[in-house]
Every structure is written in C-alpha cells, then in structure tokens.
Image (tube, rainbow, N blue to C red; front, side, top):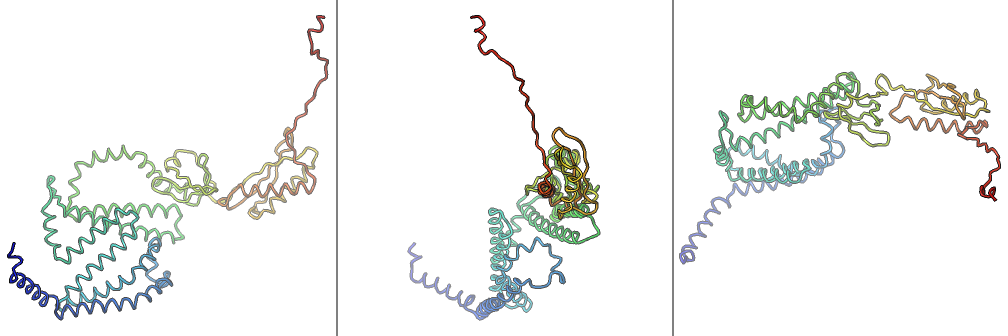
Length: 444
C-alpha cells in the first residue's frame, strides 16, 4: 500500500485531475453555458411576478378564448400552477437555449443537465400536487429522478437494452420488463387523456339546451366508457401485445366476471335503462321507500338522492327499476299537497272554509292558478273534517314547510274569528250505587 502514498504517484494523480479540470471544466464553453443558465434564471425571475399577476386576475376571458374548452375541474389546480410559474418559465427559456445549441452544433451539455434536473423537479411537483396518495407520489418522484439521472449520464439506452433482455415468453407473446414499464406508462397517459377528453365532452354537452338532462348524462357516460376502453386497448397494442392471445381465456374470464359482478352489472344496465327511458333524471323529486328527495346525479352503480334535511342517500339503480318509485316531477313540477283541518261543530263551517282558502292564498309559494280549494270530507267524532288543496311548482324546495306556513296562518285566522279547533274528548258518566265495603258485617 506504500505505493499509494508515494509522492510521485500522488503528484501524478493530482496533475491528472488538474489537466482534466482545465480541459473539461475550466473552459470558455462551460463558462458561457453557466452565464446563460444564470441569465435565463434572472429573466424568469423578472417575468414570473407579471405572469402570476396575470393568472390571478383571470388571464384571459375564458368565454372568448381557447381556454373555454378546458374542463372546469382543472381550474382547481390554478394555485399549484401559479406556484410553479418561476421554474416553468426558467425551464422554457433553458429549453429554447438547448434547441438553439443543438441546431448550431455547439457545446450545450451543462444546459442539458440543467434542463433535465429542472424538468424532473417541475414534473414531480405537478404530479405530487395532483395525486392524493402519498405512497404513489413518492414512487412517481423516485421514477422521475431516476430517469433524469440516467439521461444526464447518457445511460438511457444501456438500461433499456438490459430491461429488454429480461423477460419471458408465453406462447407467441414475448413479455419483457421494458414492455411492462412502457405499457404502464402509456396506459397512464392514455387514461389521463381519456378522462380529460370525457370531461371536455361532458362540459360541452351540459351547455346544450336542446338535450334533456338524462340524455346528457347518458352521452357523457357512454363517451367516458368508450374512451377508457380505447385507452386500454391502444396501450396494449402499442407495446406489441397481440389481443388475440387473450381469446382463449375470454370465455372463462367472462363467466367469472359475470358471476362476481352480477349486482354491479345489473346496476350498470339499470342505470342505462333509466337514462334511456327518461323515467328518472337529475333534478327529479322522487320517493323510494322511505326516502324522499331530489335526484342529484345518476351514476354507473347508484343514484344520489338528497333529502330535504341534507342527507344524501345512494340508491342502487336496480332498486329504481324493481321497486315502486313515485316521481313527483316526472311530467312537470306542479304538485298538489293537502292539509287536513278540523273545526268545532258549533263553528260556522262556511266561514272556516273561506278562511282556509284565504290562508292558502297568502302563502307566497302557493299558486294562484289553479286556485286553492277546500272540501268538507266528513263529520268526525270530534270535529267537522275539512281538506285544503293547493298547488305549488317548486317541490324541490320542500312541501312540509309550505304546509307548516299554511297551518300557522289558519291558526291565526281561526283565533281572530273565534273558530274553535276541537281536540279529542270523552265524557265519563258515573252511576251512583250503595256498595257494602264490609261483607262480613252481615254475618254478625
């Protein structure tokens, strides 16, 4: 080991390092590249505040530009994009320099390294900001940094060759590690694009006034399912997987899926039937069993029904087909609630009936046409039974609250006109008699 500590050996080692630094590091091209990197950073630093201010003020009029085609769900990432304005601007300026350097065939390796690292950092921050799963975010970060390092070291091609050599053969199908990685990446990108396009189509369909709500939902769901299927098939074909290789297993897999997902498939087709026959659509006021509320949405597996108390019930689509459903707004939103009123036998029934109609007309949500009406429906044990009928056109705002308001006005008017509202009562008649409480006294 003494040769490693020999003065001549160490001197040669440091001389070699000095020569390498002078020939590869301390050269004019590297200095120029470093200056350009710093210069683009300063330019980006100067432009970033103006871009942020432009973004915060809304940028452009979304209704009169190409931005109106962006799905509204993507606007929730505005704060994330705003926070990355500086690195994105810096990345764009550096990428422009990289293209110029490659075009004029000058040295640009330092700019290439800066672009790789900065692009990895931007992509990692964007993906981790969009992903809620922390484990998946860390995995994506590791993958992106790995690719960036391999690109800097020019090891992309050797690594891909090694991954392509690792694999197995299933019949006529050659499955390698590189194929699996490419398939996962392409599938992820295509699924993201499919979701983006489906949201764009759904956004455009919602703006149409010529299509009913149920048909809008049906078209949106069919487009989304079709795009997802296309994405899966395209990703498998793009990596060289022959789809006919799965024909042997399709029968057994179909039977297994049919048995395992019997309820889910039934709910899916029930939902499609509901959308096609338009018997139930978003915004309808329905009653299913004990659930009374407004249909918020029709999904692939269930319908979301929101009750008046704010609770949301998820009712399987199959139940809406197999059970009796009361759709209060199937044809139109006009419904006729009823209020039962009892008056005393000694009261003037005609005046009581007029007061009930007057009370109904004073409630804002009660329609003037058709007018409220009162019917005498019977003579009860304790009261003369009346029934007030009235019409409303906004049942989604609640029915019980209208009935409560009408009853309160009837209560006030009856008191003003001394009309008594009876309550159940019973008369108890006691027949007097002499009862011997000491029967043994007769024996004495």
